[in-house]
Image 1: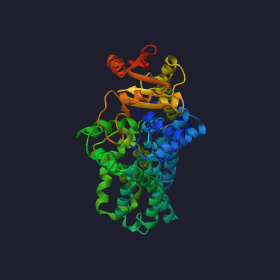
Image 2 (image 1 turned 45 degrees about the vertical axis):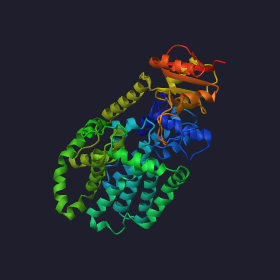
Image 3 (image 1 turned 90 degrees about the horizontal axis):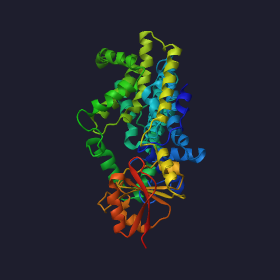
Image 4 (image 1 turned 90 degrees about the vertical axis):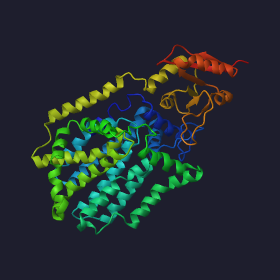
Amino acid sequence: MAAVLALALLGSRGIWDPDEGRYTNVALNMLDSGDWLNPRRNDEVGHWSKPPLTYWAIASSIAVFGANAWAARLPAALAHLLCVWLCWRIATRLAPGTQLAASVVYATMLFPFGASQLITTDYLLTAWTTLAMWAFVEARFAPAPHPRRWIALMWIALALAFVTKGPAGLFPLPVVLLFDFLLPGRREHRVLQWSGLVLFALLALPWYVAVFHGNPGLFEYFVGDELVNRMTTNEFGRHAEWFGWIEIYVPSLIVGTLPWTPTLWRWARGLPALLRPWWNDPARRQRDAHWLLLALWLLLPLLVFCFARSRMPLYLLPLFVPMALLVALQWIREGRRLPPWPRLLAWVVLLLAMKAAAIAWPTHKNAAAWADAIVARAPAPIHEIVFVEDMARYGLHLHLGRGTQIEKISLDAVQQPRFNPPYDEPLAVELGEREAGVVWIAKQADWPTVRARIEGYGYRAILLGTPFERRVMFRVEPVR
């Protein structure tokens, strides 16, 4: 059931911009150029917003299965299935008998299911952080544990998470450290041991050292913009208002945990009654260690996400694993079982119907529709698509074929940051390159201004067919 939910119709929908297109485009540029070290949005401009592991996974999948949407989405779908399996393994150790319920709940939760159909960094991050938590659970709860090897696996998983999304991948670390602090009898094998730290450094740091060395100033950009400013300011426009966490996270938790939201609500209502004896009774904490670990796994990161000033629904994705486990444990406490299979299968059919509806949903974000419109208007070959002061549809790189460059240019030369500039270059520079096989795209409302600017530089803009999505497509050639 989980495999059908994750893999059915996976490639039937075109790449949706901006996020899916951006990640796919960077991965394809790695394949086209052979440079797997430096993420690039085209031949001339780097893309430094995320570490490379997601791009590596997408590029590897496309190299094996071909340049198609199914291959681009496969890493996220496999990460989802890995999390389903890890739910089974963790539940087996924390509360034997709940493993089927835990894995079924996770596989059918609305939010994880929906996220498994999108190309983002968040599902690989979720898979690695869940793997780290499973390793910790095996080290602490197995009847005959081998704690050193399991803690080593935990650090390997944290390293993979760090190369997927930077410091965000380390959120399990304060959870397990606080858990060990609250259970003093389990400190014989500490999480912070030299072997684990060395493993982490060997796996997580080489890429960072290489790109920092090759790109002076990149370290300051990562720390300043991508970490500090993202967490403490509204520079990225991600719901930094004091009520932003209510606006983004409350609906994501209520709707995203369907159809199991009522069970989670019953657990949340009973949480204060659990917290009071934990506060002053170490023996009770020891007896309820599985409940304590899951509560910390969910609530500690959630508290950090609420205080951070960059808030997006997908940030919560790693927390749906402990929520699935809490649902399964709550059912055991209440003497309940999984819902009847006919009701569960009806929900599965509804999820698949949602996936089919997304394929038919008309949206300007669908890069496949853009590719069809371009091919219908422009004679082959097409080597480059240039967007003039408009959102670049990077998903066109996949749908128009490998080697196609996607650029976003400005009408005038503007002052830009060195890393991740809004524009690739100004109009005058792009015209001066005089490349063949270029299709230009501009907003229909901007067309008179764009055409006048192009003519002012001694070139002629030639329209290609009728407008598409309130954009005009055209070619450019010199007047003489």
